[in-house]
Image (cartoon, rainbow, N blue to C red; front, side, top):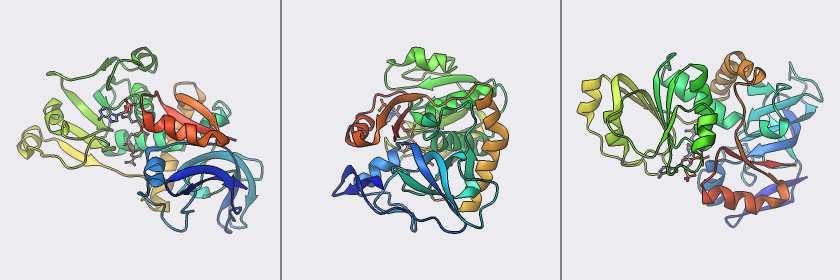
Length: 310
Ligand SMILES: NC(=O)c1ccc[n+]([C@@H]2O[C@H](COP(=O)([O-])OP(=O)(O)OC[C@H]3O[C@@H](n4cnc5c(N)ncnc54)[C@H](OP(=O)(O)O)[C@@H]3O)[C@@H](O)[C@H]2O)c1
């Protein structure tokens, strides 16, 4: 098969060995695979895939057609269209998928977009619902709102009828973010207060943003692109009886990912089916345009996902 291969901190779409699924795994013919910040880190030599996932082929999420099924796999048949998180190896013509946390793609979701669904919606759902205990009508701030996870989080918070403030670096995509159901788009904060802050950027401003939490507010750190070592006045956390928490997805066990996939299946996919949830796509690239796709991601200034499609 051909796959995106990392060599000498560069990516190339080239021939490599076919992956082989074990008896408890499936093999999919890849339709699409989303790009994520983790792929950029992996290309630069950091954030390696955890063995036995492929070390040289990036990609944490995939959509494809099942073309081989291990003898111990239940609930899927050849030809099923599935989307899934994977530990690596998604950016290829063939990829191994674990059935425990694979989802059948609803017919309402374009399979070309579905390769960009899992990483952002699993992350945003877990952060808002499991970490932040999002409540109907909460005032929610999303920092770094125009990226993949941010656009997913806006849509989930909208289902909960929240009052959503989307914080961005500039207002280039203000209209698009309002169309996704953000109530306002801002580049800075004043005295406004929030029940939930989802921080996809972090850095030194985390400290002042804690002042923007309401009493009993919840602050969730999910991305640390602007820095992960910050000074915090813990008195503010105490006074507000606030909760400061965070999460990562890739390092979770199969069982933990399965629990999350079950939540997405039971509670979120119905909103895909009724049109309230979709993947915001910045741009689709052919796999053989992989260098342009990675450069586009690294340059920033996008709305939603960049997705590679075969
Ligand atoms: N913890 C987890 O499990 C998990 C899972 C998925 C993602 N992540 C991380 O969460 C973050 C968001 O993921 P994503 O998929 O949404 O990434 P993304 O699509 O690259 O979006 C990141 C967003 O953050 C903005 N941003 C970056 N640095 C900023 C800064 N200093 N000030 C203001 N805005 C800034 C970017 O704006 P510009 O476009 O203007 O640069 C972009 O809109 C990434 O750091 C990613 O690695 C974590």
